[in-house]
Amino acid sequence: DDVIYFLFSFERILCYLLTLILTMLRTDILEWVAIESDSSNVLKRPDLHRMMETTAQKLRLMGGTVELVDIGEQELPNGQTLALPKVVTATFGTDPNKHTVCVYGHVDVQPAKLEDGWATDPYNLTDINGNLYGRGASDNKAPVLAWIHAVEAYQALSMELPVNVKFVIEGMEETGSNGLDAMILAQRDTFFSDVDYIIISDCGWLSRRPALTYGTRGNCYFFAEVEGPKQDLHSGVYGGTVIEPMTDLIVRLFLHPSDTLISPSGKILIPGIREAVAPLSDEEWKMYQDIQFDMDSYKNKIGVTQLMYSNKVDLLAHMWRYPTVSVHGIEGAFSDSGSKTVIPAKVTAKFSIRQVPNMDPAMVKKQVTDYLHSVFAKRKSPNKLKVTMVIGAKPWLADTQHPLYEAGKAAVKRVFDMDPDLIREGGTIPIARTFQDVTGKSIIMMPIGGFDDGLHSQNEKMSRYNYIEGTKLFIAYLNEVSQIKKTSV
Image (cartoon, rainbow, N blue to C red; front, side):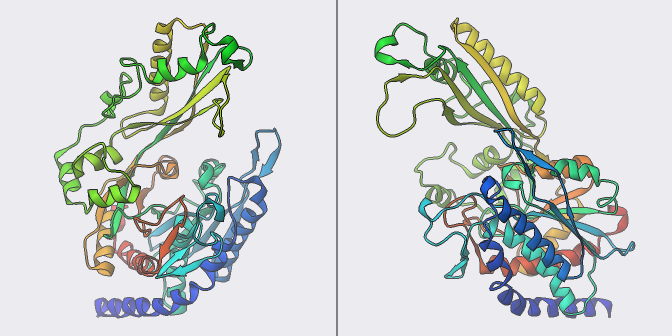
């Protein structure tokens, strides 16, 4: 009888959602996308504060126990300080006999302007052919709202939540989550003390098949600065008489045939990096084989004719579980349109290494610094080299056999009538590792964003299908988690 009641109740929720979400599309997400909560632009800070208050008010109106947590100030490059947006925390239910899940999300966004190439106003949610276009629609406002709607659906039907639900919603994720690590540490023994599981939905599917994410790469970001003359020089007057910093940086550090960071095939040549990587296991190989992924569609999506690897398993492995080096730019070089015959006095290369489990940022920093200095010393250049690591975010990896993931598979099967892909993210979501290290709680990443949502790009969108079915998924997942035995926590 209990099973029959549960099935009946669950179907009532899903049916009700169709009406609820269609209504919410014209209210909450429309209002949220309209707020220009760009965390990288200090001039938009009032909008960011308004976004956090809007989020808090939404949760208050639902009857949650809500707090806006002050996380301090941000120091700007000019020495001024600016208040960081407060972190919103909310609690729905405190039954000690139930599991407690904590949902993390963010409501800040990347910069966006119509003149960047958007087909529509990025801050005016626009529905075109079932897709909701707007900055932050997929990353991460719609997923946050989908979790909120999941709680609302239970409330609207006067049904008790099967688990206690907590929210942690921040406003600085796109610029490094300033202040959040300290806040999590400070509330480890209070807000997080009764949390059993943490859920993150700040990611996306790999294909049209739903996915569960169980790993992310870390990120070590470096500046390699070469300094020479005391000022920029005229290349006609001084060219041929000085050893140029730009030549040292590009030709001798990055393009030298034997002493460089990466080989033409993408192999990292820095001693010790590749040796730290765990070999691909037979189990992993089989998992990658089963993942739905079309190489031709992937090439068409990004507009290239050739990839580094010609088969699916190699490509996915190097996207997710092997480290990579990417060179991002050179500061100090002449980059404007036109011509300028200048010898830059100081240039800085910016590059990163996406690191994987078994790699430690402190060790990567030493390996990279030692290697570049040893290469530079061979040139006997009078110029000065300075290597700095400005980001050292750790990778994260979960156990896909954990009951948390078994519950996720069951929820996906129930809503989508198919098994999910088990995937990893090539990018970095530092908060996952912070939650793991500070709270010791088990974590799952449960995306609802589409593979073609255009995160951080022009014309970002969230499809109505993913938004509605994703909300159903979250409801189903709360029910599945409620059935995990307490001894499995």
